[in-house]
Amino acid sequence: MWSLETLGRVRLSRHFFMRDFLYSEIGNFHARQNIPDDPDLAIETGRAFCETLLDPLEETFGRIAVRSGYRSAALNRFGNENRLNCARNDHPLECHIWDRGRGEARIAGASVVIPWFADRYAQGRDWRDLAWWLHDHLDYSEIWFFPKLCAFNLVWRPVPLRRIDSYIAPRGRLVVEGQEPSVPLDKRQAAYADFPPFPGIRYP
Image (cartoon, rainbow, N blue to C red):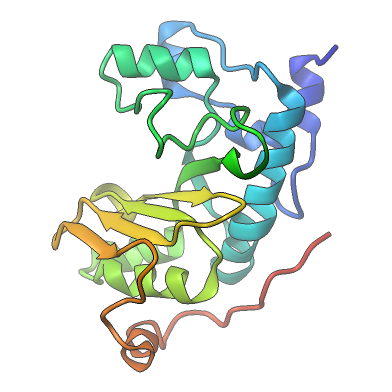
């Protein structure tokens, strides 16, 4: 029998614990619980997400801020029904419900901010500089960028889609699933040439 305290103490990766992803502003304001239906599956999928995507970000840019992490199916449904910026539970791109699907149908994601880049974005830096860095260094599935703080949804799947979209101008699709970017590698690298060195992916 999982207790919420025990669940929160589960270490997902070198830098992240399950508790880092359980806080929900929707749940807090509306007095709704945010507890997985299947804690073991949420941990398994969340661990893959953190080791593959979030740890390399933290080790490159410093502390990563999680804006919206895990959502239970019930909480996400409530958010969608009340127009609180939650996709439908059955939407193919809904990434916050970590304990749904098995095998290649697993998915985990979070909305995150990189403070190092947010400072530069506030001074006029192009969001696409970060997008190209993410594309060239991480085995992501989907990325969606948002105007506030240059936050973005970062998504893991066992078989990545490799797709990038943005609500920041120029809005739309930057990288099409299954296709190479229209911008060549040397120009992408030039866009992020001043970024911190990438240490690579390390596991505990």
